[in-house]
Length: 340
Image (cartoon, rainbow, N blue to C red):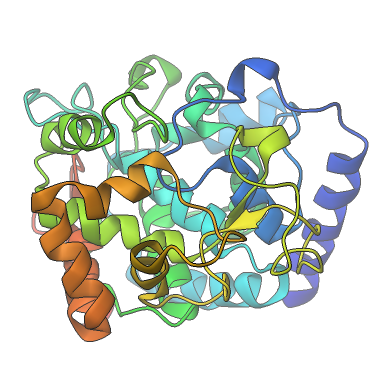
């Protein structure tokens, strides 16, 4: 499997290098957490407009609403770990899981109209949303794993990949459950505009508007923001960050971009420390990042996480698990754990 994943990654890098640049309209799309360029840089991939063959996609996406197979999920987790070791694609896999679940609207009861973690992000119509620019590369990276383990849903695979990426980067173990059903067609995808923007006029108000709609609170918002400890951003692709810094000029992956932290492959609480100190001009601070120490209610948690990594890890793990379950339809209804 390791050789297969390495070959797949090499093929993707070669095809991406020959592809035209990303669409202009996506330059400043909503990317409050992982700007698409930071994720692509980590994996060494460039955004390309190419898509999986429609015929193959039609077959692969004919999912049914049933629980994933636990044994296959456990095996897939090992393959995801190998993928992470060989491609350093942690941020783009975290972003994949978050963007599939982050469309949830607590005010809508019906599934799948309520959005959330339902595998809809695999369809072209949703992949083309501005906030999802570059996520085609994440789908291509994990498609060989989905092909190898057909008895798992895309919804579960996206969330498994996201949680595993956090843990493999040194973050906390996420208390995940599985058994998510997939939507079956692109007509079930959510409308565009559900995900947060990195540079709104009123950052704190915007974050609350988006995350309160999901049923999350201020603590969840600040804790989840801490995942910016991973990855980097490129101005020519996302509209944010410097072309290169002392921390990114040598990669890994394609050199360049600007990271939020000096050790941008490591999950820890340095994101909060760096924003608080504001002493390193080579590190990125987005308007939504700065708001965590400017808004009085957010600041309580941001100060706490800057001082106490254990507290951050505890709250982050809870918030990530909560986010991964949003809008999901489980079979069995209570879901199941891989560690039972």
